[in-house]
Image (tube, rainbow, N blue to C red; front, side, top):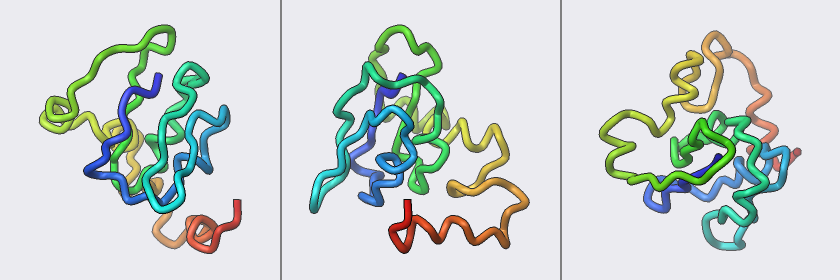
Length: 110
């Protein structure tokens, strides 16, 4: 379940808003998104995987909220850890250096 959106790391790219299949996040004009419907989280990790700033943490237990400490997650390497475990770097799959589909987010196509 989504447990953290780091205000200090988030760049307000709204990629989490775009990729979430259950509409957990709300975009905020001029600000960072908010976790508006945490109980709708399906623990798919899409938001965490596609976050280029490693600003999200999804706890692997989907049935209950768990209190997390951002500083501890940073020290433990948990922010961005799911993507790294899959071989992704900066929200891009390994071996996709020439894949330009990420540009769809840059031009606003969703």
